[in-house]
Length: 484
Image (cartoon, rainbow, N blue to C red; front, side):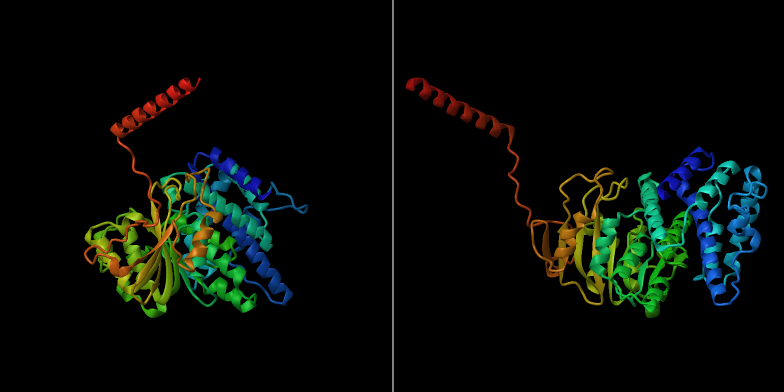
C-alpha cells in the first residue's frame, strides 16, 4: 500500500510543471510527509497528556494543523469538500501563509535541538514547487493515508524513503552526492563498532545514511531500556549539512528511523574555525563520505593548517581534529588521495600517519558509486598513536558493478570478517609504515599477492608458435599415413 502511495505522489509530481526531477520529487514529498508526521506526533503527545490528566500545548496554531488546512473531514471521516482548499486557493495558502508561518519557528524556538527549530529550518530552506493546486490536493489526500503511528509503519516508510533517496542518487551527478551504497555504510559501521554512550558524527551528512544505519546497528545490539533508547535518540548521533535539500531529506530520514528531533545542523562545516575545536566538541566515532572534487574559497582554506581547494582534503583535516583521542573513523575518499604528489596530499598523508593509526584501507571497485565514475577507498583509522602497519583489502565482487549489479551486503562479508585478523590473502596484504618513502608517503594500492599473469606475447612469438605447431601437426599426419 505504502509503495503505491509513493508512486501515485510521484506520478502527480511528474505531471506538475513545477517539479522537474527526482531531486524535486523527493524534496516536495518530504515537506508534505513532514507535516503529516508532525500531525501524528502532536496527536500522540496530546493523547498521552490526556491520559495523565494534563493539557498538551500544540506546537502549531489551529489554522496550520494538518486536519484543518490539509484534510478537513466531515462526520463520516471523509474529506469535507466545503472546507477543503483546492486549486489556486490551496497554493496561495501554502505559499503565502503556511510556509512563512512555519519558517518563523527558526527565530522563536528555544534552541536548535528542538522539533520547533527543525520546523523553522525546513520551511526556511524549502519552497513549494507544486504549481497546480489540484495536483497538490491529490498529493495531500495520498499523504493522509500514510500511517506514522506504529514502529512497523515507520520502518516500512523509512525503507521506501531510502529507495527514493537511492533513485535520486542514480538520477545524475547532482543526486550522487546524497547516496552512499548502504552495504558499504553497514560494513564501515561494523568495523568501527559504535557503542551506547559514544557520540557518532558525520560532518557531511547528506541524506544521513551513516547516522540512520548507525542507529539501526546500535539499536539492534544495545540492552533494551528506556535510558538507552533516550541516549540513542537524543545524545548519540550528530551531523552537519550545507545543502538545503540534503538537510531536509536528512532530517526526514532520521525522523523515519525513529529520531524525533535529530541533532543535524544546517551549516557549512568547513566554515568553522578548526583550531577552536575543544575536547568537549569531539566525537568517539566519525563516519563520512565527504564530497570530493569541490573547490572551497581561499577564506575557507585559511581555517586549515594544510591549505587546499579540494573539499574532501579539508573535510579529512576537520575529521581528524574532531575525533577524540582513541576515537575511530571510517572515511570514503577518492583513491588518488593515496598517491597524488602535490604538497597538500603529501602533507595530509603525513598528518594522518603520524597522528593516527591508519590500520586499514579498503579499495573499492569501479562502479561502486553509481553515476559518479570515480574509484574510491575507505580509510579506517584511530586517533592518538602513529601508524605502524596498514592492512589493505581489494574488494573484488567478481562482476562488473552497475545499476543492475549494485554492491550488496554479501560482497562486504569477507572484508568485515578478515579485517578483524588482518589476514593476508590474494586480495589483502600488510604494509609496514617503515617501508614508506618519507618524501611522498605514497600509499598506493599495490597488491603483492596477486598471482602473476602470463605476459602477453609479441606477434612474432605467436607466428613462431603457429609455425612450430604446423610442423608438429604435419609430422603426426605423416606418421599416421605410414602406419596405414
